[in-house]
Image (cartoon, one colour):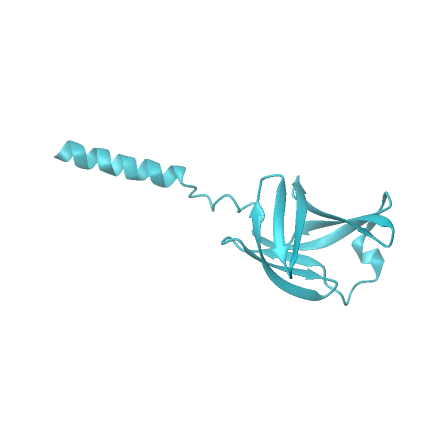
Length: 124
């Protein structure tokens, strides 16, 4: 009986270790991300040069799969799935794919006949 109890404890410990005690698979992106640069028709500029001080551009990801997207000062609640190289996000009736690489999230879109990308970095 002692042997069974010991095996059971070992199995439970191993299961706890393997189940992601390190914060889960979303831990790399959980937190607030703000726009730091933009690429417009191939030219990269600092986001601060766009005169958008009064219009926040950010994403906040929670560990439970919920998020908040604030684009041009307009806030929407939503949900996301992190795929290690991208984030599929749904908010305000829209679905977007943000690319994830080397600690940077990139939102690409076509606006005013220009290819545009916003790059976001984590602030918390």
